[in-house]
Length: 313
Image (tube, rainbow, N blue to C red; front, side, top):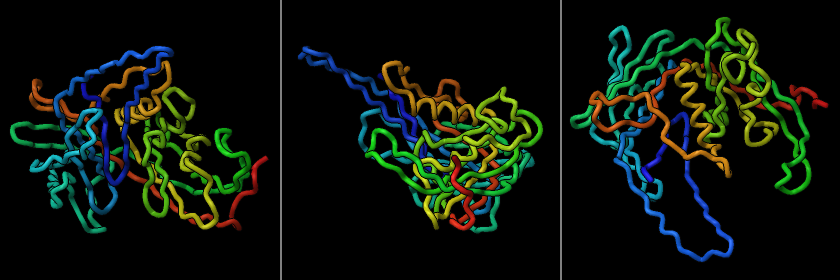
């Protein structure tokens, strides 16, 4: 079995896919020796630049085999630059020696601009990798609302009920089909996407292309996708970030979600998701991961029972 590794780790999100294989044969005591083949080590890129002020980070690591329990190894000594389509060059440096190449540090520093295209270039030893992306438009978040709810606890847990607040945001998609977005929960001032299944993406104001949702307010399941793990409580500091993404990024993230929920007896073999980072040498080692670019709209609030909507029937 060749290496099947997908690993992302940045200030924006964590995605990890772990393969579990359980073989059970009733009444059989044969020992099965499963031999695996370790594939070549590959560069893994996790970089996402935005129009937000502050530090921008591109993380470079080496891939590892399924059953390798050693810590992920950083890529050290690479030359990393991002160039926009009007000639501005941004040099990213690994100041900490940990594979996290950063640009900018001041709260006023901003790299991304809506409508501009960005080219990532990574030089490591004799290999050169490049990738391109564009920052698309993003709508303004109009408001955040929350509703008090009493819900039954899931059947696989103790019987009873739980009470709290479902938080949702309101925003309207732009007129013109094909806008795609990544919706992120903000909890206590930080984006909270620590599981692949938490990834919430939208095509126009719905889940996928073809829905009659262009130019409309985001549908309720998307609006409420920031209430993921459990109901919020009074005093919770919550919010949302709406990131514009390209259609390519939309389908990449859709595959990440599909792979993370790929289980059961009808599961298909896990495979590496095609990266948008390309080796200049067609015969060279391929890269994994993704380089993206986003404009960001953000809003936060503190849950106040006095401002909550009444419980829905």
